[in-house]
Image (cartoon, rainbow, N blue to C red; front, side):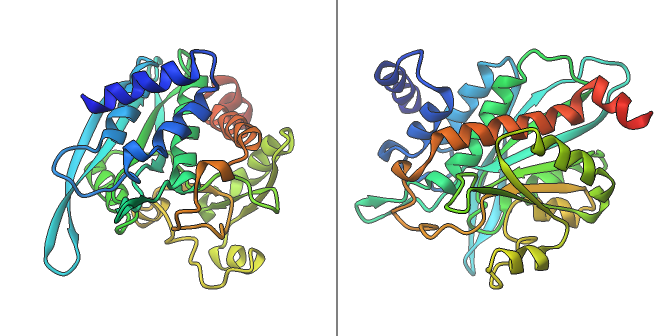
Length: 299
């Protein structure tokens, strides 16, 4: 129960009044979590920690274990953490799935890769969204998925989408690298099928302190971010949803010079801005699960 010991130590260090988002980031990037490697037979201690946070909000939580090919001949095991906040209406609207990968690069020798922005930031915000929406009356299920093995080929998201089978999903919201960089701007890439929601999405973010730019083209997004080498459509866990014809919107902060280096550490995170990002995305999620907002869109 090493993961539980770490959780208790964290509470003692930062106290019950500590900002929960910052506390989660500190735990996920700690040396005890070893850079959150993927591919072990049992869930990594970071997966247990995420499970415990979701359980605090009375969500239905379980591991989704899967196998994936790694390298030329190896088969590895991954473990998604799936938490469900159920709709309490009859009938319910189609669910939304919020994803954020918790795995990172692990250790190289004696050094671990903290993966603060990539992607402890996305996981911490996802947990924070669940905290903010705890106990709310919602008209569709919210399925939170902390995916594993994203760094090795989006395998956790692929496994989750495959497991869906014929189950329909209204939208995937993917959170990956949310610490606002020097441009101080949150970017979003959405599937073209969400074009009718463009005005609603932009209005939601205009009413927040977060500078926001929405794209419906990965090529245009790459050009605007001066990153022609990045295929933003295939860059993260929203891609398997796209392949399954499930509408998606991916939120991120663009390029990070510390990406996949030991410098992607907690001291680089601006927690004031990350909290604003979490508030803004939560507000957007509310427009999807609130009865009043859905009624307004249909009138």
